Length: 312
Length: 292
Image (cartoon, rainbow over all chains, first blue to last red; front, side):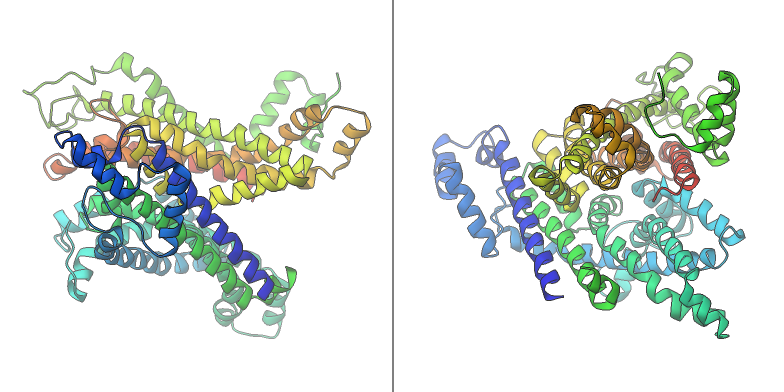
């Protein structure tokens, strides 16, 4: 067990290092002077040169790389050239709305997806199963931003239940402003949750231990919810951890649709401003989150499911 | 010449039939959902190809006729500049499909060959391929593509570079895992015994058998790339105006959501319809022989 975890951990460190290296190379491939870009064309060359010297941009590439890694190891993500303050500080202000949006979206996906998966797995190819499949096939091709607009049009503009843009903190404010974007994010995830859970539930429900439970006369309800779910839920959990990257990408788009000041809209703003250090930092953080989530899911699975532990 | 590849039982039967009849039997074996899906996707592709011939000029401004609802003169209505939406949507679809086909079917052969060769040769080469695949898959895909767009500047270049850089890995993983199993099968061993070159074994005996699953997977990938391209264009960092693109048209219509619902709604419906067709094809293909 310990060996398995440490090997996985080592690989994750390796991936994060590779990601850091790739973003470093990407940023240094850019033609032109980042300082000149940030300060604008009217600033004198002298000021640009001092700034370059201060940032260490005139050092050899290898030296810059080493100091970049050193900085990262100390938790320093650099300075945003366009906004003029530290990246950590800027991110700190933007991270909360995005985190809340992602967790709220996940919650909605589970609340809708799990019941749908259960009713379709209990009777495969039954009416509920076909209905669910039709629904997921439709949602599969929906662009999240379009779905968001349609939801905003229906619940916001026509029915006036929720505001269509903005962000207000506090419990009621969050509920009012985040429900529509979270519903959109959740619906786009429902496809994945439903299909994976349905597939696993059907497999588990056909296994011998379920047969044994049935022959002992245990209520079907108890079999599905207690005996089968326990084994069917784990692979779905792994898949959910793998879509963290998709969720982060989804927030970039949805924060734009609903005008939420989160990390996603920060990334878009950084791209349009050509604020490379900020883009670099957000890419790296998003990558680290994805890697950490998959590590967590793997470890959790090994802890909860002895079969995984023994097979490695 | 005899058949070089192992054949399924059904194909043995069709081989004994006259050519026309064999094709008919094969067509009948295609699941209904796949046939419906092919009709939807095919219809949309035909529309995208031939729309410029039958519709109005997608760039023609007409300020006397802005935001007019769908009518016989303008099937999908007009936008805030009086441009015909039908023409713009299908020209946009054409651009989307071209780009999506490019990025998907550049990644597929790349991943397929790398994965198959890695699994066949094994050793250090395989380890490098496998590690690179793992790394590419654990990158946050959309964020990385956006980062590449940040460097190349808004436009198609970022997407055309960024998507293949990551998405070859999924095909490589798929091909590799299958090749590892297939390598041990007797027809592959027979090819070795016959003294065929490694290149011939991989390209003529291995890859044709791996292609099927990769193509099934590519239907999902096509849709994912379509949504990504439309999403980036919606954000304003993909296809640049005045070129029509479905995501960009949806963004243009957003301020007029209440006065002119058709501008944002209709391009979205076209995407949903395309997704439905692709979904039916993919689902039917994977169901028909239980491809995981």
